[in-house]
Length: 243
Length: 78
Image 1 (cartoon, helix red, strand yellow):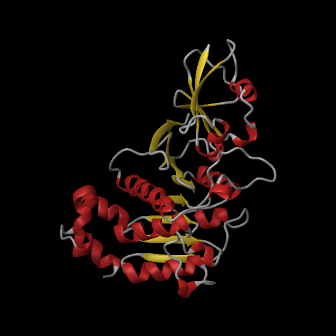
Image 2: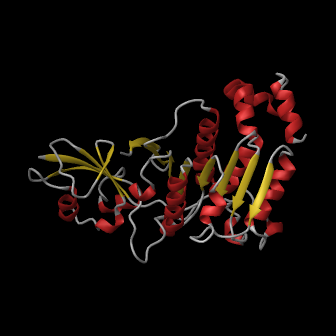
Image 3: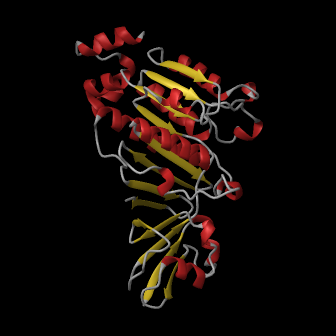
């Protein structure tokens, strides 16, 4: 079904079968908000693959996928979009193919480039929400800088081992420098020693996806000025206040 | 005065006697977070988020009797 026809049906109060199970939580108005929204997902790896999957099925009308990296064998343990058949394929291009297979209402645009100082402003402008699914501290801080400048909500997520964290930044907030120190020569976190097992990105990504849905529909309470930190090794789930 | 220290993830190795990385430490009055880190020999570059009673704080923040100090290493993977 093409997007415009879906929107017309929903505006008449008719719910296409594929969205029936969404309506109880977000309503027809919420579904329309999602279908009319533009979201950029920066990074299509462990977090990004799961976020793209959720937002596509949930029915976000436009997804811009930004990732200059290609799939490698060491991605297979956790990255939803990685398959034995697409090793060497660009992650953003693979994501857009997956989107097209799942939901023809969703326009997926692949940007097979790494976000950098040169292109970040252009690639993130015009988005309703940006999702940080990156894997370096410097690139996360760059996204945070641009979304802050542009007044775009940012949903941050990061993982390492059994641990993960999610927070939502809204226009006017201080950026991710609140939770990352900038230090020369160190652009990674404890994932360097702990690795990234299969289920951790799925867990963080699910929470990030829900944050996107809540921002776009106005339903519920955001992780705004709060950081959800989990460590499933010890069954720790804590919500910390970020001031 | 006594401070409850909670170490998260890889920082738990600094408290090998506690599986959960939670322990109590006695510090002088007006001790700062940085001074406490020094006392318990934690490398401050490993600590990216500092929480006092669940609210983010700085290494220069002063501690008070009974505070819960949470120390988090950087989580950066995707």
